[in-house]
Image 1 (cartoon, rainbow, N blue to C red):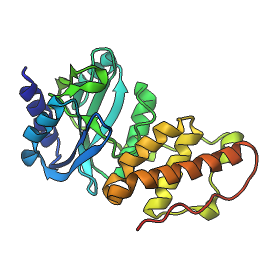
Image 2 (image 1 turned 135 degrees about the vertical axis):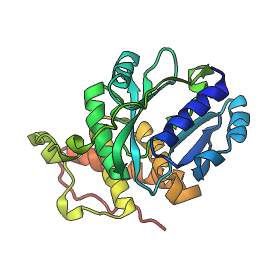
Image 3 (image 1 turned 30 degrees about the horizontal axis):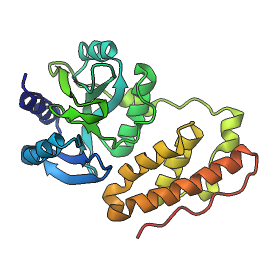
Length: 269
């Protein structure tokens, strides 16, 4: 298939699975991110994305934020396991590089909120040995038919697009009780009296959980910039840096056994 055919195959699979709108993102070689938010699939500015890709920008896509969609994303799945899944489920398999894992998009039998998609991602990552850092519910995947400049310009291709099977029922993942925390994790758990359900509060818990899991502050910072881009706009990098720095200090205090309550998370404007 041509590059254009790979892109069309991915978009057609999304549409057939119940997705109607997407966020398109371009990361230039300078590191800056350019966004097209909440765009109808048929109106995606693909010519613009191809022009950016030709100048060594990477091209990403995700279901538009702010809505429930009947699709779940699993990152970095080994090719053989991804193809096995495609034999039993409605799955789109996107190869991001010949030497790396695949992106897997899975059709679900009902729309899932962003929080539900995060739960489903964690459930599948544990079973497919996917990337445990890509479980935010709104993670970006690569758009097929474009070059992956992180991997020296190799093509991102659709390797499977099965649609004839019954959509997967996410109830098993959404109702499964998480394993009981061990004493060490309970010691480091956030204090319930500081639970904050605001957007900044959710970001705070999200960052702390990733630092506790062993992800580096640099990785967590980059992920938070992406996560906060839509809400914070031009302020996302400053916000992510400040939040990550405070979270690192908080996690380090708990690891040292100093049960100091966490600082208030940065407030949204």
